Image: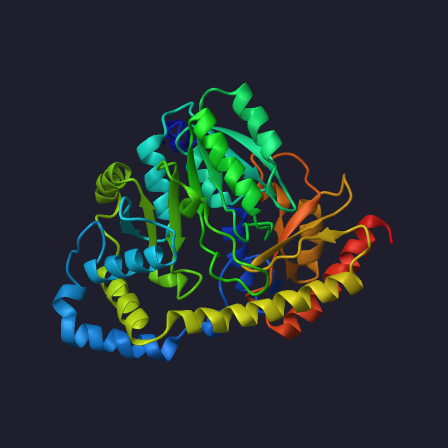
Length: 399
């Protein structure tokens, strides 16, 4: 019998499944309190409105909804996205946009269009596993830069740029970063753009959480500050409407978008027309801004409640970030405590989180940090889960 592992390509040989995806198996157990996922609260989905829209779309425009579509995206939705991004000051008439099957596909299409084996990609550390695995799959060299309380450490960033002339891309989630919840300051955003000009690299700005602000002041996107086509901007409907509809978008220089269109034709031809039509009908019939305001308020209340309990219950040596939006916060324990081992103890008590190793470039090392999600659990589950986790932490740190 053939040993299929010996046939794997170099692009995927070293890839491992996301530990976050593995967590979904645990979530199927009703007794598990999960702070591990990255999903929005399904109780906040506009189910009734979308059900009504879906029925109307199929009844009135069924042949179009169920037929092949244009790779660039369903035209009315694409035009709505472009108008919204222009109104927000994020893109200009010089940019082009493509509708993709979730923001993750946008990252992959852009990476495929730009990366050769051995090209350097600088990633925030910690970072999003989906982005890390995307770049790994193209045999890129990954370099990590630490994230400070106000975003990526720009001194470390420049040091790496001086050491490695192969850097082609910087991947960043500057607003409510996954997994830390940290937002990059305006000063650092300007510095990153300055370094991009000096060292000639492209910036991937991944912004699926940017509209989920529940406190603090807005910070301009990198894309809005970019005057030289350095930034490729990725957005998504997954966190503001529904992840299951698989609708995202990417905006960049037209020549790059054209290449991404060709790559998408190879991958999946087009994003499903029916879900694009549903999304368009929703955003034109209802106020997406009011919907975002409503869900952001709930996430803010959950985040505040979780942080309050952490401050009261967790050992004083365990620190956590204080997000102003998004879905995540990040906890740091004293050095030497393996968060993978801690997860095993927590799962034994029916609580789950994402261990820090999953979010790092070298995921085989020991990391004393972990990601917490506050969007999915109820207030009762947050209270119960934090109480349990506090006891596990106290045992781990010797309190």
